[in-house]
Image (tube, rainbow, N blue to C red):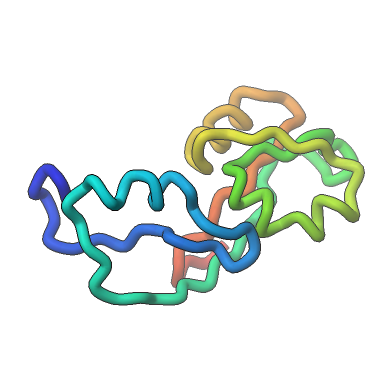
Length: 113
């Protein structure tokens, strides 16, 4: 948007389960961008791990703070630890390099797994 590569964008402003997306609220006022519409996007997550891994081998789940917040009920019921990553893509990369970590990337709307 700021570079002029797009006319409109969808950005997260609030997360119903995890609250306000603070980075956006800090950056938006000085960006020259304006909110023109609101859209509620349902988000679902998949728990992914290393090839051949099983749920009983999971020790830690790694993801963005809001993804972990949206999955807090599942995480509370498990014995898994959590690690916060800067973003879900980074969490996926970090988990791919680990042997027992898993990640919570959001499922793309309309995608099938």
